[in-house]
Image (cartoon, rainbow, N blue to C red):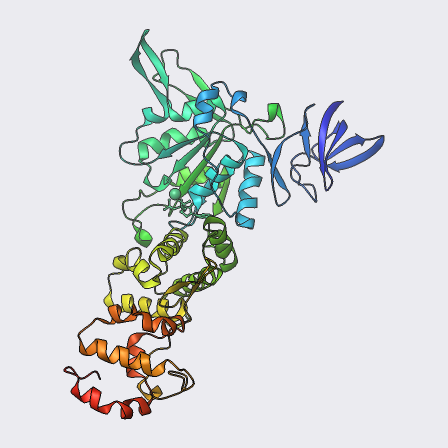
Length: 467
Ligand SMILES: Nc1ncnc2c1ncn2[C@@H]1O[C@H](COP(=O)(O)OP(=O)(O)OP(=O)(O)O)[C@@H](O)[C@H]1O
Ligand SMILES: [Mg+2]
């Protein structure tokens, strides 16, 4: 009989474990006997449902899943462990993918996360680790990474020639997670080092070690054994290698390496986020963004990534990373187009595609972001594309608008003086028009005919005809 803690909708309950079999466990809670599923079977409400030990567990919960929080003092080298715990950042965890990853962690799987660039593979692992205080060793693959970086080497130290553990062997022995970032850049000789690690039982023999040391990575179940989640391998990649889909320089991945993940572990596809998740992500990461900008920016992102059935998508790889950066820059510049031209637009080679993207930004997000008095900001309503036939219509310059004449004359005079459209837009007299989403060009070119008739002389005497 041992003491366990059972998760219930009312919180943890202390219980005695009377009997445990792979298919069922029998508990005694406050004099009552309760049967729940076996340890690898998800309980209908929780996974896992039980934690072993006397002390009440401290866990991070997500959608019926829980992971125990760990403290650096629980590791062999507390200082090193502490330094390896990622910092908590505001983060939105998309439900299905995150549940899949958590189940993998709970079940002791090695995991391969794959998906387009900037979709959140690396950050997902780091942010889960940050929530529970788990140290993570991160390896970024490039041509310089060698097998000895992972396994270790004999080197000269204060006590003569001694063995130095590598990143992988340290993680295996200490119970850290290892994040093999951009696995598709992993050189073949390094990949072969990973084979035995990705087996059901992770074990490597250190051939270079003077005594041929054998290192084992124990993948403890998180609800057992001193509450350490233990060693886990996470790999991320954009592709399975090769030059396909624009991911140049990646290595064609060895089938045997991928088979280790599909055969013993878990492959999680990190797809682009749904509009709902993407909005939640922006609100989480940039709480100061105005709600209208969040909605419109996400709408733009979804639109340019999808094909409309006839035409291919304009920007299929527009990533979460780019969306986030563009929104932040829009807040700084107040201009969604300007923000785009300092982020994703310059990399679009085709000029007509760039033009189409600018038009889409103007139509969906608007020309300018205007702050209102409360410090909140509202983007302008979408600009109506200039339509010569619309000249004189009340919707363009409302006859009831007392400022319409002053606005018209201000633009006319300023153009005659040679001021740029941009400079004219900043004139105080156009403050109201700006707020209504009218550009200076529109005020002049779409003004009603009566204004043109009334000021025909002034128009004729202007040095540069304004129209
Ligand atoms: N769900 C999310 N919530 C908050 N921020 C996110 C989310 N997903 C991605 N981000 C942010 O987007 C950026 C890119 O994410 P990340 O580095 O995890 O992408 P990746 O898939 O690993 O990209 P790559 O394949 O290029 O390495 C990071 O700044 C990250 O914090
Ligand atoms: Mg990454």
